[in-house]
Image (cartoon, rainbow, N blue to C red):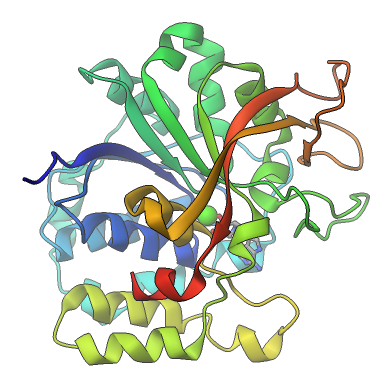
Length: 321
Ligand code: AGV
Ligand code: CA
């Protein structure tokens, strides 16, 4: 007796792993149904990322999932070289046989942050948001629609934070304690932490366990007759040399792990009583600090709150999945 697939909104920012995450979400219709996609101009050139998203959707037969582009700006922008990396996906012949004129039929004219509210408002039940970039869009609707918005969100599954490990930000004036999605818009993390929205964090503590390895990509070869596998392997191949070029900090399946843990709970160990606060300004901005000690709420930090977090993963099971 199959349960109904859970509905999700996918709020992404066009990185290499964001696109593999899209493939994962689309490839499991028995588990998940994507009702809409919003894209943030963060770890991508948003005009490219929107096109790539539409091409993937059309190539795979999902012509009616609406896609909207957020206009919210960076506080601390991603390096330009990362922002262009999505072009390597957009140029793939496999997704470029689709008719360019038909692509825009599911592109929404409304700004993504407003469309996110539209999606929430029109759902019959609270819905899960899979957020694989900065929290700006989620913070926007909480700022504008408050508790009414919070009540419409079942959970935000967010790739972000670095709790008991180093961050991945290397930026002048920053102490390196933050993860990039949080650092791009630290105030947004503060807004989400100050709200009552249920959060499930997938921090660097656990994404550090899942580098993108040659073995992972070779395995898609056994399924080369399947479009999803060919696309996933092709997209991952864009970053494969990182395990050798930057062995200390390869490319990880950050966002893909986030969606995988949502879809398959046995892959990960989730704690539900993590107490933390977010630093919104200063040299640690974007840091999420896990602590049970009482910290005064100020303009520098959010309130302290309880969230869920994925703290352990079986990497081999994730790669298999
Ligand atoms: O911090 C991880 C987040 C994930 O959402 N992103 C990439 C993933 O999509 C930012 C990021 C950190 N290091 C990066 C990133 C790198 N070396 N290249 C591109 N993006
Ligand atoms: Ca991302």
